[in-house]
Length: 330
Image 1: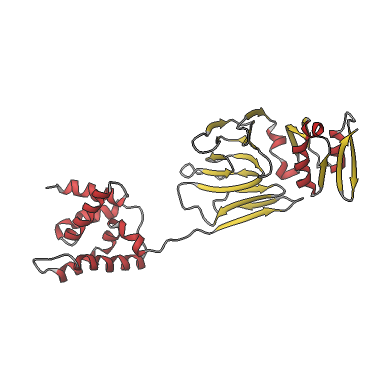
Image 2: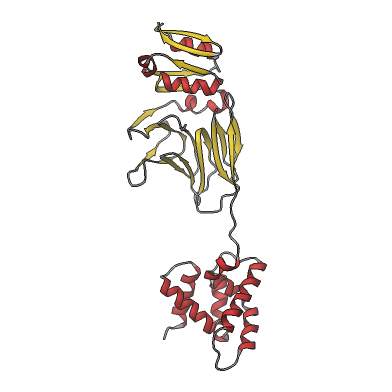
């Protein structure tokens, strides 16, 4: 025979979704027998007070009808059914919170709608998420986000490059998924670059702190970034490189159209320039395509000036044919 305190603890665990299937079944059987007995009134009130939220009125009515059916199907040797049904009406709110297993029956699932935002080639775009977080999408980038953040996490997905100024909420981490990388923050500014056609994924922290997980499930590795850190992960090879960056230059592409290349190949730079200026660039030599560059362009330079700067040692011949830029050895 359980004490009332033990029963109350069991019901509270049931309300919280804890316990084994056997324990939940025992709890439901107990409710069928005792939910209407006066000696448990005070306990139901305490459980009601301990529950953070109440179902809406229509849900309570549906739960009440369902409980009436359950109790009606339970043999009652003392023929107290009318009294039981009266007490169910009195304690409908408490019963609704306790018999959590009934909610899937009675309340239709609410599907959160997801939206897609896209920044066209040659353009950037700014959006505000439901929690107030600001996102800037670079050219050719997409972000997928929910109508509202309902769970423990604020989760979005991206394909492309975004700069995020995340609203602080310690109870609900902000999580960005991009291919084989996941970035988790509480409130910070960071940039994430992950285009589907490029195996390299870059995460750069401007301020605050960021936890990054890279790799496929079961083979992932966790990293923590400090302000000024930039990590480049190659999802094909699994290699990882770390760099220190100038946060003011690297993190301001969204506001003043800066371009910052950190040990990047000419082929990767060409892909960025194609998106920025909405042009087609062809590199006709593999050795040229593999050349690595450190370069920053901070004055919203034209495509022509950027190409001239990249060709400062005059090892390339750059021409334009029918709107397509051709880069070949000089």
